[in-house]
Length: 196
Image 1 (cartoon, rainbow, N blue to C red):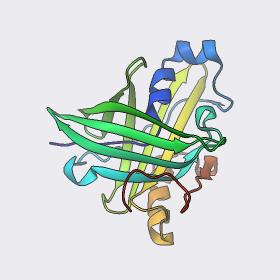
Image 2: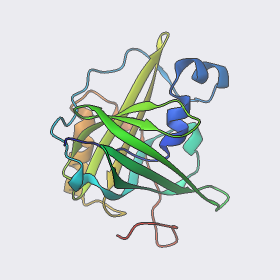
Image 3: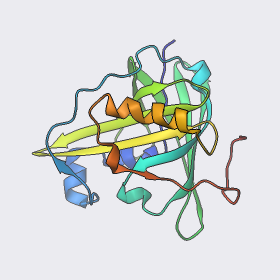
Image 4: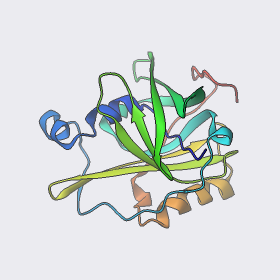
């Protein structure tokens, strides 16, 4: 079965991906004029080698992740074509936060993520080699504005230069602005759930 999994703290993203909700809450500090790019997903993505722990290396600025570090996502097969998504992070206050939801494939390279009490959302894996990196993206439009989300994930808390460049190339190949990325702190003091 083809499958994909995505990044971190998806509950909040899923809950706010409805454009009307976005406008009412005014949750986004960053948006841009224009349309979402036409992207190419990793259409042959498989679920089994993708399961396990992923660590966030970089992300686009997102207000609900403001100041969060030690971001990790763990994916587990729960059967019936569904995967559990367990996202964890450390808040600026030092408090540990987590959320658990479910995800399933709705098209090659497109995941439908559901968290109780939140609007489901789509996420796109642009590229992954399963063992070192994953490049994940989402974009939606409301009026003349577009809202973009992107994450570079790794199986460990760091990436070597060549793998990092490959992960970023997936975004460049899809005409996604690399200058919007900012690094996520990962360190020995992080409250990880998975094993590196």
